[in-house]
Image 1 (cartoon, rainbow, N blue to C red):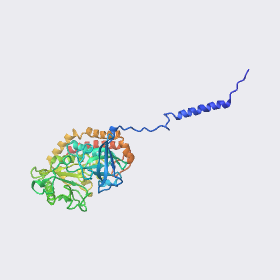
Image 2 (cartoon, rainbow, N blue to C red):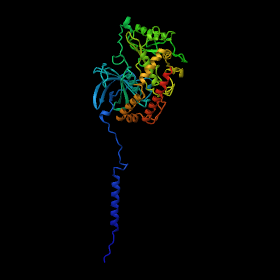
Image 3 (cartoon, rainbow, N blue to C red):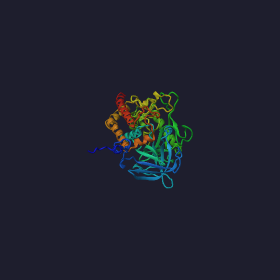
Length: 465
């Protein structure tokens, strides 16, 4: 009888082979997290934001003068605009931020200004690429401008885009119309330099209450660039004044006669409003101003608790033979609860009472709004307008839907993630944030809740006027 012996070396070799095979098979499995590749979202061409690509040929963009550059605009991966531009950094306090806003004008092959249509907007030459930075929702300006147009008060047409300069991605921007006299923007008469008397000199004009910036014709506020109100702001503590800057015609273009006319007109309005007969239909303020525009301007600033409202970036205009109108609105990046000073985050206080909270601030609010609210006729019209808007454009559902639509647009484009990779400000205090969310979602959620509380307070506050 034969005895069979196992070959130990053979057995060990077989088991070693099996062990290596099992390990290799396991490591090659798609379930192994070591080899698993992160999902890279595929963005459909139709979901991408318009792409603005600027090439300065090595030039550095500065705050004046504009430098020559080239702009290419892509929509759904198709070039929809190519052309020369002159571009500069814009803004006042926002220039402290590393993410810069830009103003540019479109030019022809000879670098002369040229009206064009971009993203389907009416033809013009002056445009803005606004950089949301401290506004981490990215959408405060777009929201209020859309609301303004919804209530038939012109505001800059605006759209989310992504910007690349010299092959460096700069993040989510808002492409906007610059405010200026134009039939499709601020639609007032073109006032010529030889129109200095009679009906001709009555318009059109654009004024603004604002900081001095850009081409200023001297230091600070002076008789070349502005005129000063005879009526001091109420509740101020440091002798502050209200200054009206010449926006159109520009300070360097407006004639002496035109300055005299518009300053006299505004003074007439203020004198009438300050008088004992201020509420009289024939002798009071209503003789000088377009009341519905004042009401809508008031409601937009109050709805958003704009901490700059009524005192900065405050535009007004007057057409030939027309009354003074408020607007368009401008610059609401610190609105909707995004300012931690002077009550800017309050949902339960009036924006027009800024002077009472911050009497020492250099830029104060004119006495207009406090006095207008002493007129029962004005208050009745204000209440009626608020009630009508709350049933439509200013309903909570309508505003929240707008926010959700903006957010969906940005999410589908993958733009939120790309923007905050480029500018990692989530979870970081950026002046003057009241709320600092660690995610974009939390920033949106904060703004939604703030708006809901604000609407509820305004319903009661306006009802009690």
